[in-house]
Image (cartoon, rainbow, N blue to C red; front, top):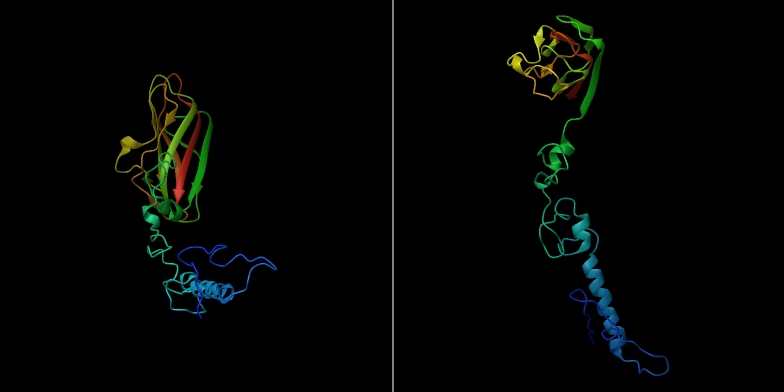
Amino acid sequence: MGGVTNYPSALDDNTSLYDVVDSTTAIIAAHHNNIKEAAKAIEAKLGIYNTSVSTSIDYRLGHPSSGHAHDAASGQGRKINPTTILVPSGGYPDALSLHDHLMARPRHIVTWQWQGSTPSGASLGGPMVFPRTMQVESVTLTVKKPPTGATLAFDVNVGPTSLWQASQGNRPVLPIGSAYYGHASPNFVTYPSGALFVVDADKVGTTEPGSEVLFTFVFKD
């Protein structure tokens, strides 16, 4: 004689599995058979090792190629495409997707400083050398004392080549009274390992040349 169970379409309760009272309830076959059917339903839902039943938990979690598919089958969600997960508004400084940020190349930030007033027409300080090939992503510039009387302009050369070889107007240029230069994408991006980076002061202010210079370079692999 077979029993009945609500599971897996619904949960069993004290009615379907019978709530009995000692010395009061007459024992009938359904007391055993309903529990038996409930146990069989649970086993079927869990599945056996290496089962091919796609609705079983063992298949969904343990199948080597198509189990945990999130393919909108009953009890599963849709496939997750990481390239469609967009960054929340204001969450990142650009419009890349979360996937792009997670998979993006690491960034390396290097600062370069010149203390005191900026001399004109000079290669400032010693050259910078990076023993690996990377890409220049952005360059920013700040000064403690902005130039007065004339514009303050710099160039950054990698060997004999300017980072802004195709658009010199995008060089780090500070108009009179300005203390910050936001990055303009360099034209010369990828440089060879061991190349020399040299900062040149092309023009300086006449009454105040501009002083306490700080460059920030952002590189990526």
